[in-house]
Amino acid sequence: MSTSVIVTRKLPESVEERMRQLFDVTLNAADRPMTQAELVEAVRHARVLVPTITDRIDAAVLAQAGPDLGLIANYGNGTDNIDVEAAAARKILVTNTPGVLTEDTADMTMAMILALPRRIVEGTRVIEEGGFTGWAPTWMMGNRVWGKRIGIVGMGRIGAAVAKRAKAFGMSVHYHNRRPAAASIAEPLGATYWASLDQMLARMDFVTIHCPQTPATFHLLSGRRLALMKQGAILVNLARGDIVDEDALIRLIEDGHLAGAGLDVFTNEPEVNPKLVKLARSGKALLLPHMGSATKEGRIDMGDKVIINIRVFMDGHRPPDLVLSQPPVHRPLSA
Image (tube, rainbow, N blue to C red; front, side, top):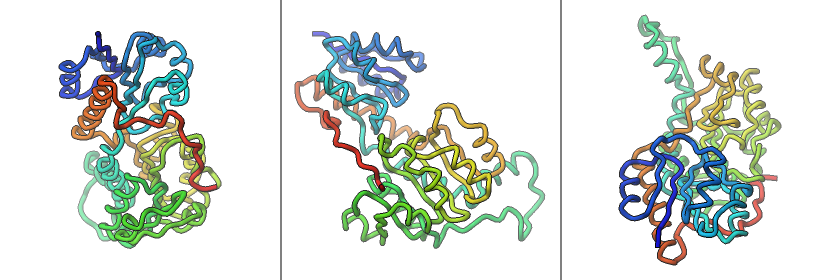
């Protein structure tokens, strides 16, 4: 029996080669995003679809799925690009690739936390533009990270990994979750739990976002909440763009209330608000093109997880990274 696997984007060569060995696979050599019509064609003919976060697999697409489609093996940590409930209604399993990007994303978060207050990108630009004329006592002064407070929104795997790095840099670790983290995680970090997100935001020097995107976390960092942040605080977001009210964030940086923001994700990605680009040019924002998890090792590990999920499914067993077919009702992190 034919084993039809359709992959929507180009993956690391070693992952694609392993797929060629194991499956009857159709790869995307052009590495351009599929159109909606092409996604519909793919779900009509695939037994397994391997999409990425740039592919919108909504109810309209799934309504046209062929009878053989049994698994959507998402190449990504989240599944907000897939209508999981619509898939479940059609008895289509959905898997993702959790855990493999934790350290990479935490590294990039810490890099942003260091880069913004120490003006690293600005300093690089001065050299590139030939503006360095010699050291001076009051030139290019930034702000110290050591001793500052960091507030982590979402103390899951990535949030905890960021907390470990922040503690190593002498920062005071604080976090907000729906419930306190396990003592085995929080106590070694000396992490302080805040039941109220509002109260935590008002006291932090840095705020980093590491919660999933759900209907409940849309604009979790609303204009009202962003305005609660300390004068001169910095926001870092490597989760999803829609968790933050981007327009309000821009206004608060322009007004001088916030010192800046480090963003790897955006509201209308891949489009980036020109006002954010302007802030970046003035040293008040650090913008990255969704590269927080972009390491060779991480992307290969993601592919390995996809392959394992497909093989287990093909063998008639429950894939290890199965997303709940009936997701629990998502409560906001903070009311």
